[in-house]
Image (cartoon, rainbow, N blue to C red; front, side, top):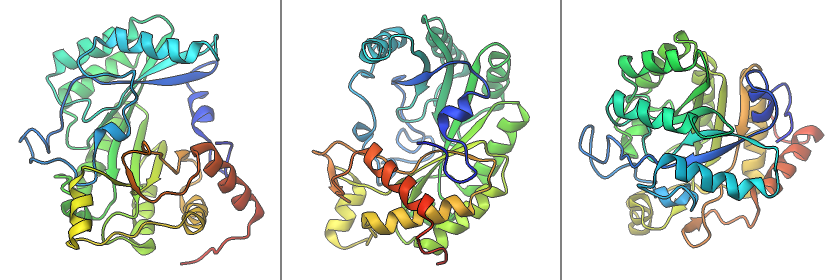
Length: 304
């Protein structure tokens, strides 16, 4: 997305560290999550079906270099001069021993035209030993850590079986920033029991942290998830935003978010065959175009 208000977009954020255009390539490291494998819990997050955000070229158990080369072939036809970042996205990309993880990360950095790493993980899954190793790696390569915070509301986190707390997020962000590594937070808008009041409380909590970039998306009800079964049975109600009300909410988040925090995105698009709701019929770029036009017009409700 182009700049919204006073916030940099992801490309502008990257330009602080890297020259030229960079494309993220998703990597599946073959790891699970602490709330799936029993370290913290079982069953995983109630809303999560990992297929909904793992591209086909990031297949499980394929060598890291092979996944990255597949991704490069996918993008290079249209963007022959593009350079790349290895995005360790699937499940919890730090849920293993430090030696094993560092070997995976170095394999990625050994691939031609891969200039850095973005590591997606949970705030309760960043050991001091791993962070120290990442700090050393970041002396020569771009490294960013993206924590799945989702919300600052501990009650909501418990409801969706995150098996961590907001204090874990605060701790992880502060330690990572102290290590000199850029920090991103992932947030979900419209989790069970949350309206605009709770969403804005999360934005205020994010503003209090040394966060560099955020990415948000609407809660999506996905087939095969525990949340979908809970909604179907009437155990839990969720609010699925109409597109116009979500656009206005995003405008208010832009106004509320600290201006030095970059914004990567506000929307995600799960595969059609998996998505139950909301079904807006918009591609991500179409949503972004509408958001930019609405925000620039200034014609949206500015209070809640």
